[in-house]
Amino acid sequence: MARCSTCHRRMLAGRACQAHEGGELGPPAPELHRESVASPKWSAPVGACVGSGGFASVWEIPGGVLKVAHADHELARARMAREAEALAAVGAPWV
Image (cartoon, rainbow, N blue to C red; front, side, top):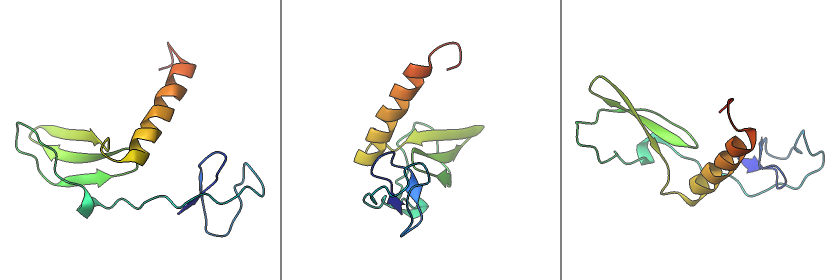
């Protein structure tokens, strides 16, 4: 999926960013699929992958679920860094 080169929002193919009319199309975001996500190393038995998105995957474990960040992917590390900066800017008590 294409992204705006200014704000990195996802855009439909061939369309300009709604926030930045006429913005250039950025490189497409890599597709992450459940099948391509490796099971995490965890001391308890890990069940099936419940879901996977841009930041993390969620796995079944006894008594709950385990959220594992996609820190091994360069794009994920960059997203996490931007998210941390945004949360730091908002600050307490809202975060």
